[in-house]
Image 1 (tube, rainbow, N blue to C red):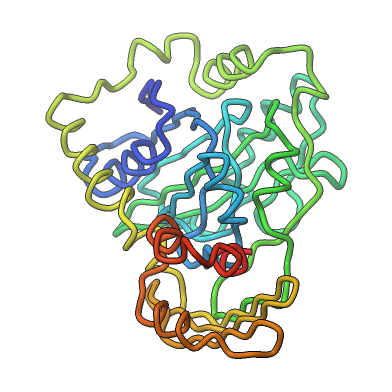
Image 2: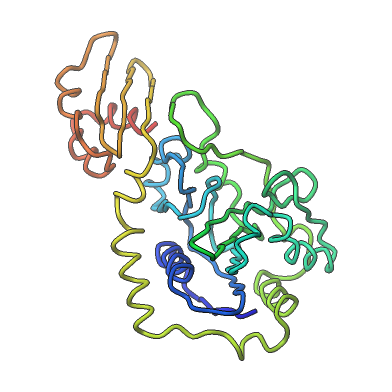
Length: 308
């Protein structure tokens, strides 16, 4: 097994790197990579940003949300979280989350952390979730990745990830919200020590000697993928399934449909009176928060309701 010592904390770059490796890496050995992202919300391939994220709060806090290529639910990343990735040509292990997480589980159990697989793809201590896992298959290659909450800001996590509501209807994959906790509550080791321990336990003391270095040409290609795809509105917003959305705030009531990130129909009333002019203003507009805020600069109550 080999690794890549990825020190980037840019979520756009790191998700682009995973996709590049899965689709372009010629290898005969499995890969195991540990990595981190700066604060960000990472949504599953088939999820709806309008259902999963408090978009207004994310914008206020300057926290980006990025769609990944794997399925599964929405997760929060910050520098108190450690991500792990396995890449293997044994795609027959797809959907076998027990096998794909057992090395992580065994390593943590060995140092007294009582973590285990619960349900299909969660790692928990008791009833509290530590890790969510997801997969992506490309040709004969399987990508399996997961989180390890170590010392994450759980308050921010809970605020950014929307609880299940009935204000958005769409044929999307829904996240299963769970109570969460941090690994730091169960070990005296630091995050960096846990990272080193996992590398040595899974790969041996010489793991750095055999680490794969990425050429400048590869890094350029990863950055191109980051800029063209992962930073794009088309990927992060427009890939959300079509939605029927209802919002209510004070005396404002709103119902609208969004298809490929564009408002296709909308009805707005205030004190039971229709706001026809604003409806016309918003119709066929892309849901790009900054642009909508500029458009509604004289109607910020409508903007706030729209992203409630």
